[in-house]
Length: 294
Image (cartoon, rainbow, N blue to C red):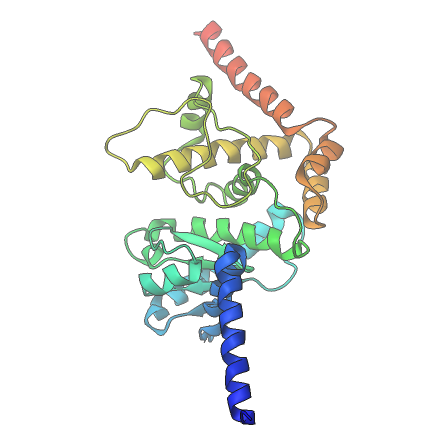
C-alpha cells in the first residue's frame, strides 16, 4: 500500500494541478493572485511614513513621495468629502520589471496604477517624468479612496467617471499637457469623449465620437488618453459645480456599492448622458457668445 508520504505527495501534486487549471481558466483569479504575490505592502515601509513602501534602490524617490503624500491625501479627502476608509498605501519602484509584475499588466510604461487598494508608482515618475509625480500620485490616491470604501465585488463605476473624478480631484493629474481650453475646443470641434459603460482599465484611452487629429510630435496613445481624461475631468468638475449636494450624494452611493446608473439618476434626477449634452451645449454657447462679441 502507498505510504502516507506518497499519498501526501500525490495529494499535493493534485492540488497544485487543480489550482493551476483554475488560474488558467479564470483570468480574474490569475490577476488577483499575481497582485497578491507582488503586493507593495511586502516591500519595506519608509521610516518617516509607513504608508510609503519602496524597493531599497528607490529610497530617494520614496523620500520625495513621503514629502508629497500628506498634502495629496488632504487634497483627495477634501475633494471626495470624507477621510480615507483606511490609511492608503503607496508603492515606489526602482525596477521597471518589478513594477510591471506589480501592476499585473506587464507594461512598465504606465506611469501609475491602483491595485488592491494601493497606488503603484513607476520609476519614470522619479526620473524622466519627475514633473508629473505629485499630480499622478494625487490622481491615484483618488482611485484608492473610492475603492477603499466600496464593498468587495461591488459593480465598478464607468471608467470615464473614475478617471474624470481623479483628474478633477488632483487638479489635472493624469491629463498633463492638455489644457481645459484645448479640451473644450476639441469638444466644440466634435472630438468628444464617449460616456460609455466601460468599467475596466483601458490604457488605450476612452472612445471619442470622432477621432481627434494626431500631433506627430507626440505619442498618439498618450495624447489621446490625456485628452479623454481631461474632458472627463472637466465634466465631473461641472457636475460638482452644478450641484455639490447631488455630487456628494452620488459619491456616497458609489462608495456604498450602488450601481452607477441608478445612483446617478437618483442624485441628479436625470442620466449622465443627458447632463453631458447640457455640458456640451454650454461650451457651444460660450463659443457663440464669444463670436457675437468679437
